[in-house]
Amino acid sequence: MSISKSGTLDLDSCSKEGPILRCDKSMAGNIHFFIETVKPKDTVECYRVRWDELEEHRLVEHVMSCSGAHWYGGAETRLQHWPIVLQGHQAPKPFITGDIHSNHEAFGGILERYWLSSNATAIKINDSVPFHLGWDETNKTLFFQARYGDSPYKPEPDNPHHVTLSYRVCVGHDVTSIHKYMVRRYFNKPNKVPSEAVFRQPIWSTKALEEVNQEKILKYASDIQKNGFNCSHLELYDRHTSGYGEFDLDPIKFPNTSAMFQKLKEDGFQVTSWTHPFVNYNSVNFGVGVERGLFVRVPGSQLPALVRWWNGIAGILDFTNPEARDWYALNLRTLKNKYGVVSFKFDAGETSYLPQQFSTFVPLQDPSTFTRRYTEMAIPFNDRAELRSGYQSQNISCFFRIIDRDSLWGYTLGLKSIIPTVLTISILGYQFILPDIIGGNTNSNLTGLPDRELYIRWLELSAFMPAMQFSLPPWHFDDKVVNIAKKFTALHESLVAPRVLELAGEVLYTGDPIIRPLWWIATDDEAAYKVDSQFLIGNDLLVAPVLEPGKQERDIYLPAGRWRSYKGEYFDKGPVYLTDYPVDLDEVAYFVWSG
Image (tube, rainbow, N blue to C red; front, top):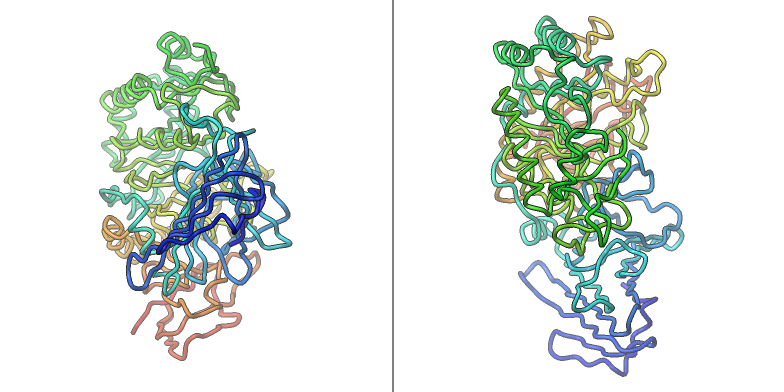
């Protein structure tokens, strides 16, 4: 760790008192700086670092070297690698939740101020810091910066000019044990496991339907049954209301809503509905929101601050306002009571959708607290609820969905990005993970279908995730794809779900990942730190899906131990590289630890 930009420490101003080093001057002026060594347990040593800048309007920046180790954590990103890859030079920017699908440079919707390295070092930035993150690829450095100027962070009213950068660095015996220590010490834990059925059986979303109306939804549900799939969880996605900001179903598209819900219930479907924090200016509820002060406002005014989102221009509900929370929750409960809607898919919620200048009922010193308040709306519905944003929200006991993927093979929101993204948010403490819909968003393909092979490989990877989600159904391809889908939904239910559910119960106490990197069981193995196309479920099921087009084989790395393949072979001279291991189009290579 080195310290710059805040002014180099004036060492003549430093004194050591036991485990604390204090300094009160830098070359730039007066400061309070200290590092305190804390030994919370025999195998862990921590350092509390704090730099208070006493000169007005100055920033604090510490430079962290990342060379010589692999780093993990931070946030979802558009181009997701595991371990983190620093690309180019990025001046420090606000570390707040954002929509990486629409803003390519943003940090993602699930984000925590936490990083972990292969040399068993973990860093946790304090909640109170107006935190900005930058990096430099050439020098392999991260910039940790605290500032209020040109920033969405707001200073405390009684101390408007002085800025503080404080964080904790902990060093342990190995990467797995230091991560376990940090999670137990600093992360929220969920207080219950969501619906067992969602772990076992797929969600079916209406997102891919060309039209959304009563007839089309009943046909979709009927096709799911006719093709021999479980009638489990049907998600009413977008386009079922009259306008954005309405809650009830459009009476023109749904002439007999109660009868539709009754039929779906009789057929064994649990129905959830899509919701979001936006009320479009042309919605009937916009006037209600303005009159009752339910929206995020223009500073110094009672006017709503209008924002642009992917479906128009809207006011955004202010979830720091108890009245807005009550109004929103009442509308959701009404849908639940009227039709038997069991839960909701809570979309958006990222801080980046707030306007640059905004005012909320309770002032937000850290803008990402807005995301935290929105995720709390899922608590009453958490058994089958779904969120795509999270900040200090690990205790919201529902499914967290990674951001929408495109129907592509690569690392930029494509198939190859799923494992690095799932591993990243696992390390950030979010364990009940829902990958995006199988096959991704098909908006770039002339046929309206993703590549058939891509769809199959995506389906196979999803079968080894905590939960599966279809939208584009397999019967839009051919019978072979339907049969592969049946095979893997059955394998998910019989092999994967029981293991995941067992691990889900442990999460409540430990916070340990369900989906784990290979280094979790191989902390001394340098090769394991770089594997980004394989993962573990718990400690004893290793999964190696094919993620490349045109391949019916792949290289596989097995850490030391005795492994039995899904074909019945034993490998016990670990660690082992299996080169060009054959994997047919209707297979996923997986290996069970056998002692």
